[in-house]
Length: 73
Figure 1 (cartoon, rainbow, N blue to C red):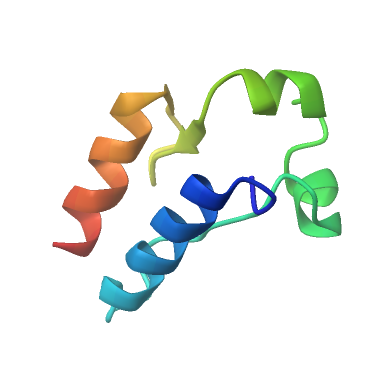
Figure 2 (cartoon, rainbow, N blue to C red):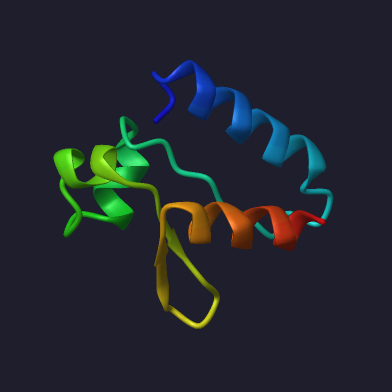
């Protein structure tokens, strides 16, 4: 959620450390979110963090955060 200061800060920190470009971050308020995650509504996206692993598996909340940080080192 790019409108959440804490979320925006964490996204910025992840991008800064993602030297290999392995993590794709999509703001829930962007048109890219609607195109990529149309099945997930805004209310659902606001309720908890969603992440999708390279194999297509969905992870949520702290698990999504853990996988993102692990991916960037």
